[in-house]
Length: 238
Image 1: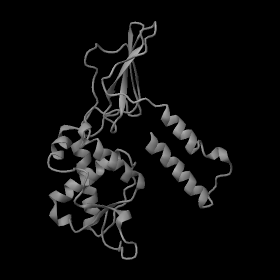
Image 2: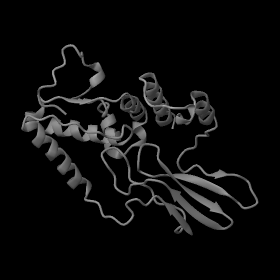
Image 3: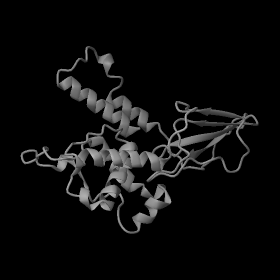
Image 4: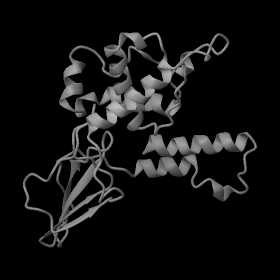
């Protein structure tokens, strides 16, 4: 939360400093002090830790892994003899670094399910199909002398795509002369969080941690580390 909401403040400050169209203070939804006050009120809990509020209704809840981004949670709530499972975005499919969402272990199906449902009636292609289409498209572009610009959400999706690209470059030596860069201050900060909490990811990442840091990429560089005076982007790149 601090990372995402803090980045919004940073962008609004940059826009205002550059003479952007921020016509009134209301255009900035909150201040740094208000954000910090919000963060100070957050209480951290672990997955599967039951919180009992000791109310007459018997209200208690625990968090389950939602499989969406690192730390994403769904909540199993018990109140008045009934149960509710509440979740925003979730994923039932394990990806390169995250475990799939958990199902409630010690309960029957919840009485009520409240769920994010943007793709509720759609069937997605398998992860293998999506990855093959993604890497195949990029290889076709750079092999033809092109440059591939990938706009992507900096938290979660960026880390997944970086893992896919770094592994694909390792497996395809003919591509290794073609550089891959990422250009996001927020993605860089998110990577540090991911490196810290790699033990909360899937078995694939945890096993790689025994050999080294899976987020220390062999074929990907942060664009911020590039000398702009000598940087030549006329060649194929990602």
